[in-house]
Image 1 (cartoon, rainbow, N blue to C red):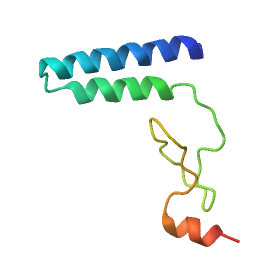
Image 2 (tube, helix red, strand yellow):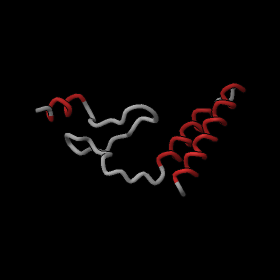
Image 3 (tube, rainbow, N blue to C red):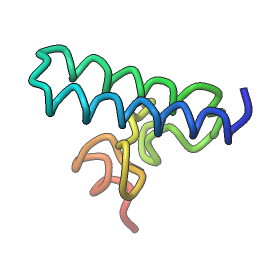
Image 4 (cartoon, one colour):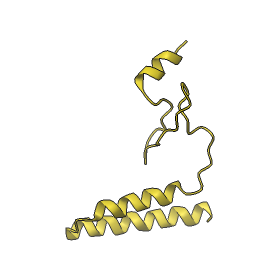
Length: 79
């Protein structure tokens, strides 16, 4: 699946979730989670681990990518 195709699926999924939320459907969270899962398909970035201990990180849907698994790891790795 190409990145453009995946991006379009995620966009459509979020539109469906927004529509379901307006209509009051209780399972809107599942649709949102599915859109997030589709967004993550095929990501092979090697920087998905904590910079301190290497633990795999769950990256946020939007915003800045996480580098540390905890405040402890961030402090431990500081120069």
